[in-house]
Every structure is written in C-alpha cells, then in structure tokens.
Image 1 (cartoon, rainbow, N blue to C red):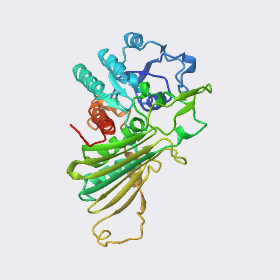
Image 2 (cartoon, helix red, strand yellow):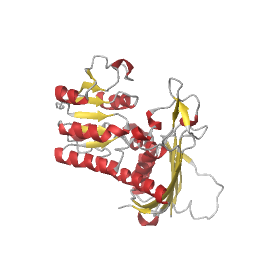
Image 3 (tube, one colour):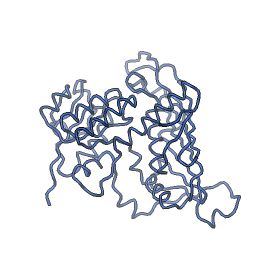
Length: 358
C-alpha cells in the first residue's frame, strides 16, 4: 500500500527545529523541501543530513516556491501567530512550538485561520509523549484512583541562574511573552489537563524576576524582562485544588517536571526524568489504613506498554493528515486552552485576585 508523499518545511532554524526534523522528516514518504530563518544559514543550528535542503531567509518566498503540505513553526514565540497564519494561507498544515502565541487574541486568530483553511494545526506539547504521563492518564481515566481530590505540580530548572548560561531571546519579554510561566508553565497546564481530563475553573498567582541581568554571548550585560519564578493556585473541575510552582533559577535542577495526584483511592506521581516509571499507592486494601511510613512505591511501567505506544507530537499530525484513525496530537484547541490559562494567571498577578476562566 503506497503512502502519500508529504512535502515538509521548517520555519526557524534554532535548537528546537532539530526535534521537529527528527520526529517528522524521519517518517516514511516525508520530503524536506525547505528551511527558512532570517539569520545567516552558516549560524543555523541544524542537525546533520540537511545540508542540501533549500535554505531561505524569507518564509513567504519559501512557501511560494516549495509549496509544502506541512510546516513546523520553530521561531521565538513572538512570530508563532504571524507565521502559522501565513503557512495556513499557503495551504499547509501547521505544527507549532509552544506556547501557541503571545496572547489569547493571537491564538484565536490562529485557530480561525486553521478552520478557514480546513487544515490540521498542532502544538508541540512534548510531555504527551512521556510513557509515565500517558500511563498515569490511563489509570485516572479507568478510575483506579477514584474521584480526584488534589494536584501538586512543579517544574524546576537552574539554567537561568547559572553564570555559564548566557542571555537568550527567552529572557526578552518582547520576544518570548513570558518567562518560566510560559516556557515551563505551559507544559504544566497542558500536562495536568492531559493526565486528569479536568478543566481549569479559576486561578490566582504570583511571579518574580530574581535575576535582573545576564551577559549575552559577547559578554555584554542584558536586562532580564521575563519572570524567573511563578506560582499559582487553580480550582479544577469538581472543586479539585491544584498547586503549581515553576522556576528557572533553582540550583541543582536540570529539567525536573513532576505531577502528583491524590484521589479517594490512592496517590500517584510521575516525573519527566523517569519516563518509564510511576510512583503509586492505590487500591481499597492499600488505602484502607490511615497512616503509613511516608513512601510512595516506585513501579516500572509494563514493558509491552513502553514498547508499543507511539509518540503523538510533533509527528502525530502527519498520521492525522494521512487520515489514520488512531492519529493523536495536541491541537490548536489544546494550545488555545493553555493560552487562556496563561492570560488568566497574568491578569491575576496584576489584580492580585482570583480570575475566573471563561
């Protein structure tokens, strides 16, 4: 059975473009027809094997000349909406990096353009690929923990506080739109929704900028205009309380993303750096008694489960384009949901009051 060829292009040649290329370009019958970035191609951070791909500094020119079926948007956040809409207007499906946009209005415009074009639009919420997160989702959906009562979510990094790490565009609010809140918090918001299936009802939060400046690659001091730390409290569907904390300046943490949930029938935890295991104490007998030594047992996931599940992002959109019934990917609608939460958290930080999610 033949597979329809998909002409594939990438806009943005920074580090994250390699993730999209490795996931999408390696699939059968996918041809990379162009890569675009305004910087000198000699500075692009491209993986080996794409030296002969046509290179452009003008994305509109690339879209006109190469006519791709699918485009990955791998640019700084400021350009996500403009370039996604441009690709959709040129007849391409879009796989966009997170966060979806700078504002809810931009995200809504992206979804409207997608619907008008009749195309697929995906957001790279990469933790949907983590085996532990997916297995936890299955446990919750099957009711193994019963009615959920609480959620605790942390995502901690240290890179921004490390002297060896230079200033980047992610530290500039005019390009990134957010700091830890958008870069890491967007994964937290999607991760909790993905695992629990619960929606956000209202939120209240705080943010700080604890590192005032950092030297850039040339050694010139640059002011940090994004948040480095954020924390918020959310009420989820059914009155479930969820606590969130994120930081880019927590020494000793590389990329530590942990979600813990308790329900009437047990407690479960997952961590990004342990993708093949969960922490779980559940079941009517094990939860019958009121006191335990504080220890949630670590359990490896079934080997068969880890062997056969398919990553859903960013390459899941290819299976959807080809009409596969089992295709799964994070959609523009998922991205818009998290964008509304980011905006609500930001509004709460300004008003110092609870904000209801519309």
